[in-house]
Image 1 (tube, rainbow, N blue to C red):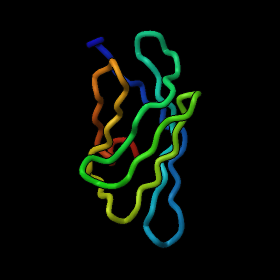
Image 2: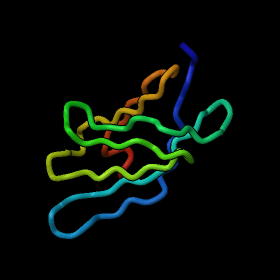
Image 3: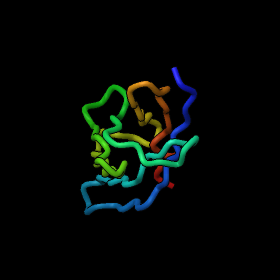
Image 4: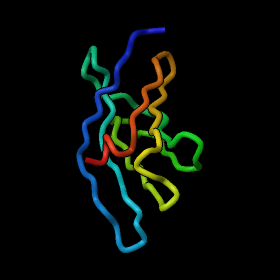
Length: 92
């Protein structure tokens, strides 16, 4: 398996309404080539919250009230090591 580290560029974090939902948007890139990675699976561990990056590596992940700052976001891409980040680390 290739050594891989996702570079996560946090583009926008916005709080939506009073329902305490939040949206994370960003772009997933390879650290070795700095190229965007299309169709990366992105999801919250042990929750039914997730998305896939588009052909440009961009994504929008809607976090509902069931997601806490201590939950883990997983970035998974075939042939690469799965990366894990805390929601609180990416939402700051």
